[in-house]
Amino acid sequence: MVSRVIPVDTFDLVIFGATGDLATRKILPALYRRDLAGQLPEGARITGAARTEFTDDTWPAEVRSVLDETLPADQRDTVALDRFLGRLGYVPIDVRGEAGWPELAARMRADVVQAYYFSVGPSLFGDLAQRLHVHGMNTAECRIVVEKPFGHDLETARALNATLAAHFDEHQIYRIDHYLGKETVQNLMAIRFGNMLFEPLWNAQYVDHIQITVAETVGVAGRGGYYDKSGAMRDMVQNHMMQLLCLIAMEPPYAFEPDAVRDEKLKVIRALDPVQPADIVRGQYAAGNGHASYLDDAENPASRTESFIALKAHVSSWRWKGTPFYLRTGKRMRARTSEIAITFKDPPHSIFGAQEGQKSNVLAIRLQPNEGIKLKVTIKEPGPGGMRLVEVPLDMSFAEALGTSDRDIADAYERLIMDVIRGNQTLFMRGDEVEAAWAWTDPIIAAWESREEVPQSYDPGSSGPEDALMLMHRDGRRWREVKP
Ligand code: NAD
Image (cartoon, rainbow, N blue to C red; front, side, top):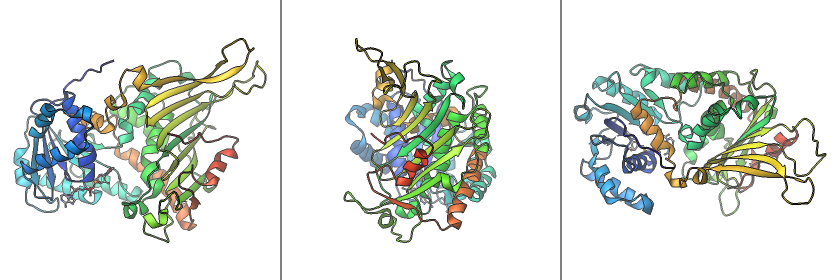
C-alpha cells in the first residue's frame, strides 16, 4: 500500500540551535526525508540560526557531510539532496544578543507559513520569544515549536507557559512529545475509535489491567549531569508515558481535532489518583556487563536520582475505576522496547475446564522497535488431539499488513514537523495538559525527596529491581517480558 504524499504549504522554517544534536540527528534528516518523499513545496526554505559562524554556503556543506555520513543507502538520492540543501540558509545569531536579528527578520516572507523551531535549551525560550517579538516576527499566524523538558516541576512549567504566552497565543505553540508522532500511537486511536470491536470492551468491566513499558539498554553516560537533575519520573513518566496513558484512558473525543482530543486527555490527567509510596519502586543501575554504574555515569556518588521507576496508577473515572495502570521505564535494561499492553479479563467461566493453553486476551501495541499491534487470542490447537487450547497472536506488524518496511514508516519528527506546517496541533501538548501532568507528578517526587529515599540497585541487563516484580506479583499479576 503506497501512501499519498500531499505537499504542505510553502513555508519559512527557522531552526534555532541548528548546529545542535537534536537539529542534526532528528530535525534536518526528517526534513530531508519529507523532501525526498515529495512533501516539501518548491518555495519551502529552512534557515539555521545558532552561535556558530556559518554562512549560507558553509552550513549546507556541513549538513551535506552529516547526511552523507548518516543516511542509510536507500535514502540517498543526489538530486533530492541537492534540492534539499538548496533550501538551506544560515544566519549566525546569539539568542541573547542583538546581532543577526534584523537580517533574519528580513528573510521571512509574509505570504508563507512561518515557523520557528526552538531547538535550544529552555533557559533561552524567554529570550527567543522576546526577540521574535521585538523584531516583528511573531505574526498572528506564525508557529513556534518547543521541545522537552517543558519545565522541571509545576512552578517552572507555569513560568515557561507564561513566558511564551506573553508573545504567542496558545494556537501558535507546538509542544513536541515525539511519542505522539509515532505511527502506532496514532493507530491506538484508529483502533479504538475507528472500529466497533474494542471500544465496548475498553473499560474496567473487561480490562484487567494495562502495562506501559519503556525500556532502554543505554545508560546515562555522556549526559549524566543533565539526567541526574531529572530522573526517570521527570524524563519519561511526566511526559511520554503520561501521554500514552491518556490516549488509552481517554473518552472518545467528538472529533479528531486538536482541542477535542486535548480536552479528553486533560480529563484523564485530572482523574489520576495520587500514587501511594507503596505503589512506586525506584531503581538505579549497578555496574556490570562491562558498564559503569549509574552513580559513576552521573558522576555523583551521592545521587538519589532514579534511572528506573515502576508505579501503579489509578484513573478515577466511571470507565476505569478499579483497573490499574502499571508504568515502568528504565535505563540499562534487558532490551530496548516500548510497549503498551492491554490485558483483558478471563472469561467468567471456562467451559473447557482448567487448561494450560487458555490465557487472557492481550492487545499489545509496540512502539519500538518493529512498530505493530498484536492481539493474543485463544484458539483450538490444530489437529485431532482433542479440545486443547492454545494462545496465538493475530499480528498486525505494519511491515506485513501495509506492505511498508520499517523505514518507510515516517519518523515521528517527520510527521510532527509537517503537522506544524499544516497548522494541526492534535499531536502536540497543550499548556494546561503539561501543567496538570506536573501537578500529579510533583507531590510524588516531593514525597520521596522528603523521605530522602535511596533508589534500589538493579543489575544492568535486567528488568529492574526485584521490588518492581513484586509490585505486580502482590496483585496476582506479572510484567510482560522485556524483550527486543
Ligand atoms: P545541543 O546542546 O546539542 O545544541 C544546542 C544548540 O543551541 C546549538 O546549536 C547551540 O549552538 C545553540 N545555542 C546554545 N546557546 C545559544 C545562544 N545563546 N544563542 C544561539 N544558539 C545557541 O542541544 P540539543 O541536544 O540539540 O537540544 C536542544 C533542545 O532540545 C534542548 O531543549 C533539549 O532538551 C531538547 N531535546 C533534545 C533531544 C535530543 O535528542 N538531543 C531530545 C529531546 C529534547
